[in-house]
Length: 336
Image (tube, rainbow, N blue to C red; front, side):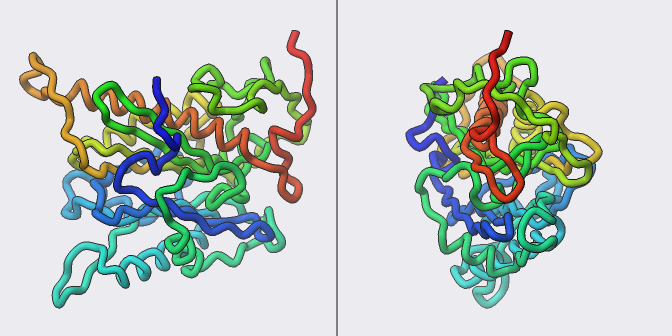
């Protein structure tokens, strides 16, 4: 496998990423912007989701393209950040065309539960957070750790965070992921003291910290109903909505491999897929009914791998915040 130059969601041409982080509130918002629009898909597998505009991404529904996707902390309150993104996009004239040059920006969103982890139980999340995240957006590498939607995240009882990773396929197509890890399930294998999918590392991307084996404290017990991992996978391939939905479905394998258990009754695990449609799908002779099916398989597999790596980068990059202890600050122990 080969990572993209920035090893992040912004390796996919046509995507800008921005964040707003409130450290005192232990909460934040992340946004992926698509100035030229992107084909959107989604797959929700957790049983306690907090989402917006997911129904319109179904293949049988009208709208084909989205202008942004929002990941936010703040639980149900956090969805209001998407209002600010809509307002910012409307000022740019980016959206579904209406009459008299008006547009309706299409902004799906998902929120995770991080209430009670900062100064106040309910963080002061608002539409302004979404606007500020848009103003921050660029094609720079995505910052991992206590950033944006990952600011107040916890993962299996230790500090979670925001992570990103990418992969360039032999076909030249780029696949990438960005995720806010706030899971009920554990991200560390208690038998080894290391992340479950550490073997997925590409070219030392996890850093020296990945060599550390930690002893999980007795307090590292996740609290039910205070969870949800939310993410985006993206590609520069040309996809229709049904194909984008399939990629989102396959990307959930990255959750299942890196978080155990995943998709629980107390998580609202959601993955969006965005395709910027820059490169045609490779066609394989012999698959007469669907010659692009092998390419979809390859992109979906890479999306799951990128998601698993992004989850590990999120946890290893996180820093202790308030009473949430990070992987880097856990005690080391010798595995027998």
